[in-house]
Length: 251
Image (cartoon, rainbow, N blue to C red; front, side, top):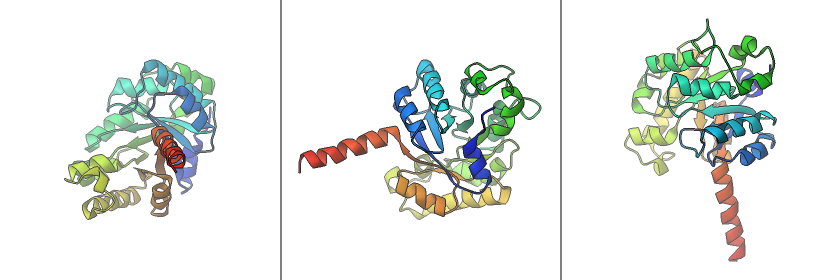
């Protein structure tokens, strides 16, 4: 069974950094999975991935050094199971607002008796014959806390067995607090909500995570105590490179 090296880093108290994929490109997945980053998060909620490109991208990531992870489109037992069967070793579940939501997410991610995942797997067989015996221990389950309601329930959500940590969605969190996402880093309400979730992670012994908008912010979040951090995306890298080239061309 392949070890989840990103999970191991986080359990040692070290930050694990990831890049998010949204372009729907298995080629981009392959390139980024071999750049030295800790994990790749394939985004099937907002990204341009269909069933076939999801399978191809997870195969490409699994062949690299980064841990393959995915954000599921919604908190759905079957959708979560499909991503696991295709080889994801980490799952991010969006819009988890209550402890019941968290219990449903956690149960879908692990085989009994730890959870309620259906017995069976497809492409994940690439990890070896011991996959069903070892995957429960290698899986990383993060719930997204991205609403005012979720912040209120953060400690109860994170106390759920089988939830390994969270991944704060700052933009949706800002919107739920009446703040435009572009102003989220300057608004005290958003800052206080993020600190409250960070404290809930400390109180429950769970891994705090967050979506950062840049490598610079990712480093700042790690210094503040976050350990599961997406620090950039394939779309962001392409646009940043294109804009930098354009500035050079135009003098």
